[in-house]
Length: 191
Image: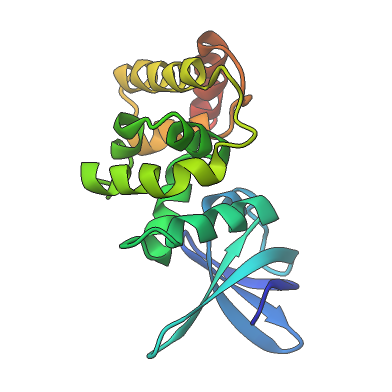
């Protein structure tokens, strides 16, 4: 099993990268956090890898941190969520935000993620809540409410839900709603 790759980036698009290691190019599906690193072709890249084996193919998925890899593996342990769906979930929000939403059983937050319906959100909460409840702070409900309020406020300025999610992933994690909106607007203004 491949668990980690470190080599030169020879290609990258919005969903994958090709990493050259000793003359062999490994195609890796990459997470949003790995995308944020935005290395240039020729730069050295280091990715934590999940090797997904099916009867007809072998796929590699890369992550910027070990924590993100572990969360991805928890997501794919939920029945009916495959690697591509899990990558989509991780692209929609930070692992910290997702952990808090699952721990708080916030189905409404999870259903705002593209491709996640009510039944799937309930299944994620039921199967993962106890696994991730350790270490979640007491103020998770106010954190999630601030995240949702900031999202709605930014959408009212005409930004799409995807743009808003990407911007909110880059703000200070435990900031209040005003700080979240201000930092997100700054990020959105840079585009």
